[in-house]
Length: 172
Image (tube, rainbow, N blue to C red; front, side, top):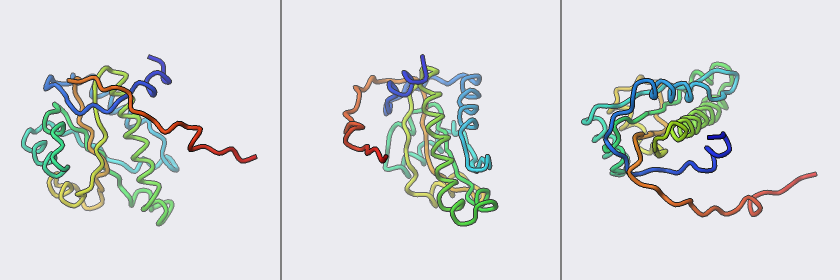
C-alpha cells in the first residue's frame, strides 16, 4: 500500500476482534510512534501497552464507556512529557509543542496499524488525572490518547468530508 493510499483509506475502527497482535507487529507499531517528528527532536513522549483486561475495563469506564477499549487485545496509551519540551522551549514547549509532537506520533501509529492490516481508533483523553492514576503514571506524564488496536470486526464506509476547497485559502 502506498503512503497516499494508506492515508486516504484509513478509517476509525470501533469494533475489534480479540485475536492477539503478534509481537513483531507491535514492535513495528512502536517504531512508527518513535519515527514521528518532534520539535528539536526532543521526543517528549512515553508509550504504554495495556493488555490487562482489568485495566482495559477501567480505561473503558474512564473513556465514556467506549467498548472498543475493552474489546481490543491491546491498547496503546500515548503520553506527553511536557517538561521534556519545556527544558528547551519553556511554556510553549510545555503547553503546545509536546502535544503537537505526541499527536504526530499518534497519527504515525494509526497509519502503521492500518498498513499492517489492523484496525484502531484514536480516543482522546478527557479524564486525564483519573487515567494517570489508573495507570500509576509518573507525575510528569500526561496521557493524551488511547489507541485500541486489533483485527477489525467491521468495515466502515468513508466519512463525508467538508472538502479541502471549503477550508483552504491561498495567500499570494
